[in-house]
Amino acid sequence: MMSLCCDVLTALAGKTLVTAESLTGGGIGAALTAVPGSSEVYKGGVISYTDWVKHHVLGVPQEILSTRGAVSAPVAQAMASGVRALLQADVAVSVTGLAGPGGDEFGNPVGTVFIGYAAEGHSGVRECRFQGNREEIRNQTIEAALKLVLDMRNPAEWKTHN
Image (cartoon, rainbow, N blue to C red):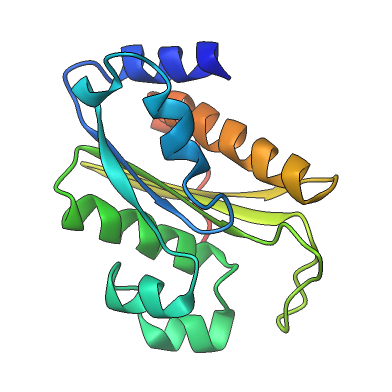
């Protein structure tokens, strides 16, 4: 994980990165800040574990939360856009999903994760289905979010979900 974090921080040299985390509870930020000098790129993040924080702090529309649920592509996108604007950064990554023990009322099973990305001129959401226990799903999400930041250096290869 340390090597991946170093790759992300190096790739974003001269830019700023922020996070909006739900199921990982700050794990992405913790992984990044384990790297000495990470403050040159990583500004911070919002742990938006509840819908209230997603709506009132990050600006996720209540209608989306009510009709699509917190574990959805539109919420991940709104979280990324919201935290990028709130913390005035060049790049934002967000995660929302289900690490267990159960699914949600919208039919999403444990392991369903949406990772959002927002930067000047492009944004997107990646849907993931992870397997394992709660800790394994959270760790897979952290790794996938960091890899997504690296992947977004070439947005033409990326698929946006709405």
